[in-house]
Length: 174
Ligand code: IMP
Ligand code: MG
Image (tube, rainbow, N blue to C red):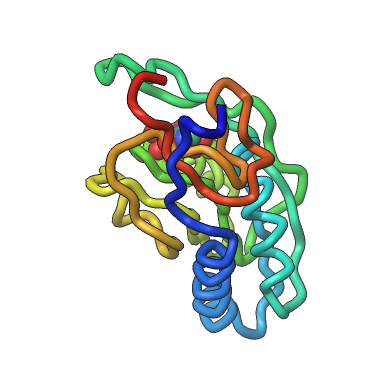
C-alpha cells in the first residue's frame, strides 16, 4: 500500500514547519495562557507536537467536526459532533486544524467558538490548500499544498494512514 504514496514532507521538514508556527504563536500569545483547541481527528498528531513546541503555559481541549457533502459543493457543510469542555469566555484561543482544504470546517468552528465570546480567537493549520476560500481566516500555517489527497501525520484516507510519521500524497488510481 505504501508504494502508492508519494512523500511530500519528511519528518524533519514537518518538525521545521511546526517550529516556525510555534515561534509565531509564542510571539503573538506572549504573556497569555492560551487554550489550544484541536479539531478531531486529523489534528491529533500536529496538536501533540505543537503543544510540546510551545514553551508557555497553556490549556488543551478538543472539538470534533464532521463534514458532509464532500463531493457536492452545492450542499457542503460541517456539523459539530463533540464540543469543547473548557469555558473560553474572555480567553485567548487557538484552533488547531490539520488541513484547511475548502475551508468549510474552519468557518464552522470559528463561528461556533466566536459564539462563546473568547477575547482572541486565532486559527492555525498545518497545511493549507492552494486556493482555499477561507485562507484569510488562517492566521498561521506550516505549508501550502497543491492538488492531491494527503495522508499521514494524523491525516487519513478511510481512517487509514494516520500513524505514518511523514506526509504523503496518494497517487492517482487510488
Ligand atoms: P475543509 O474542506 O477545509 O472543510 O476540510 C475538511 C476536512 O477534510 C479537513 O479538516 C480534513 O480533516 C479533511 N481533508 C481535507 N483534505 C484532506 C486531504 O487531502 N487528506 C486528508 N484529509 C483531508
Ligand atoms: Mg480535520
